[in-house]
Image (cartoon, rainbow, N blue to C red):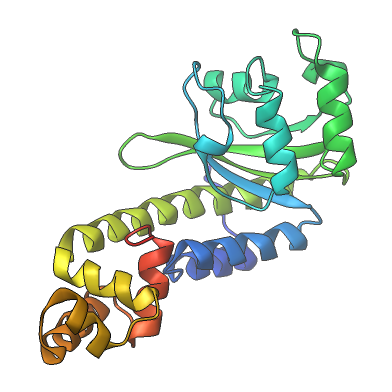
Length: 243
């Protein structure tokens, strides 16, 4: 069998994904894809262990409504989820419809789940199983209330999901290397800058010269691949380097 050839649109998407540099870039890209395919929300998740009760803890990035996520976990709906059961037993993409018998639950919560997702107009959608080079398994989903995706749309979204999950892994690895590369003093200076302190004020707090503080901040800015202190602080906050 000959391999499936990629359309120009798929190639454009994949080339764009390769150029995404941050999780926020990927978030904005997936929001645009979600709208282009007439869906309402996306989710990128790491496949949770069977013992996990918290969907939010396994979510990498998502546009699901915060209230929906909170209610989902409050009701412990991840347990006995037929969607997660399918993800754990198959690596094939699939479309689901919560109103159909095939996706009913065996814990008596089918009506609860259906009503919850109907409220947010996310009763149907597709999941695309993925994995990264380390072997970590996950999935990308697109949910809404539109008709089932066509075969061509499923193939296109599968290509996108595979490349997005891989790019997210690369971005997270880069963020980890950056975190390891910054010194404690550089992180201290970023923390105080985020708190609104000037170089002179930080120098007084840390009992160092203002010149030394500027040196630490300039070095941190370069290591974070940013152009100024404001961007450096924003990136440090985003990757969890400072609070």
